Length: 141
Length: 420
Image: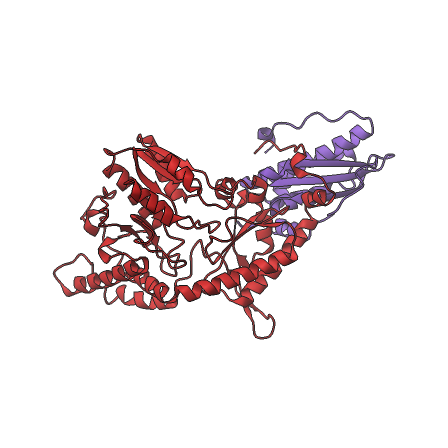
């Protein structure tokens, strides 16, 4: 399979690899996917409680190059956004940015799920209502 | 494809990319090509032309090749039928026997990790009313002979079990399987494509009635294969699956691929001469690769039997690292992965799943297929690249991090995303 230059770049130089303290109240952690399916993403955000701005984001991903690139890109995009702004990121934006082929769309779906899961975890910790469930995949992909 | 030369230690220069996928196909040996060439241009006759020199020359070349192939597997030349390759040979053997012996019985036995050319042929026969038993394999990739005994009944006409597996290199106990078949008057077919020219294979000693062969796995050209069909004790009959001019004793019509057949014959002659020595060399290179990888990485697992294995095969799962991402990191090395992402079906390897290792280890597997043209310098380069890439990807892997924290990954409630 031929990868786009952007996928190769994120694969070779992944942004924001690492972990944040999952016990901190300012940190939200999303862990999505399953080893049996061949991809697991962990995406963490650190939110400034005063501004609701995501000040830091880290990821670790078990998965193919497109999965690594999608989650790396997701951390870049959420940083500096407010929590609500981050929730507007769609998997289709990731597909477009990375020129993912149809068989790799699920990688982008997983990255969107990871963002939502991390924000959901942070909201839960901070006593906020979690966002409505993600829309069905068919409508998003 | 761009190539470049990396200076290794001293004079061990390695030319990139490195080919280490010799179960998929092999480079045609230059000595084979040389022998084929005249049969495209000067000696281009049709081997079935009986009334002129061009035909006689072609026929003579075909018969010499037939003898060379027969010699490699302990057969007689009349027992070799030429085909387009192993897929056709497997189809002809299984469908041809099923059709010929359907009055005698309708039961066929095979096993879970056969090549799709065997499994899908059996599935088609099921649609036509045949009963097929798919034996499971043990953890080492070999069938249990007791399972085979239990599966046989008075309607069993054919057992088809490969000699060596293409993914994990596991060698089946074919001699014992053949003996069991012969005791009960059941025909034994084996897909021997990965084995011939690599490990000793003799149709008499191994009690084989039909064997599928192909040229391109043993340094011959693509598009030419053969089927061994036993002529006595017992005499095996087949119903042809391709109708036409009655070539190949009526079992396979179609003008013979003379240059390809000449190449196939030469490849077998080279294998007859050099196999024993080459197997020792390949096993040493394979073990060097294995030791280098396993000496530097924890949690790597060999898939399939270590003892009963093709000398050039190494199939390893690198826990917590997904196969396709590993292939991306070693993109100057040609190998294969059992990961779903690298397969057309988007399913992880059915062979590795059948070993019971778990889908996660199938996703993490890499098949290294060493061959005649690989060198020690290449093995050292590959080991270094693989170790570096696995270490880098494990730093990126949430699973590795969780495992290091002592979390039992099998007990985690995974939120699998819905497209799977």
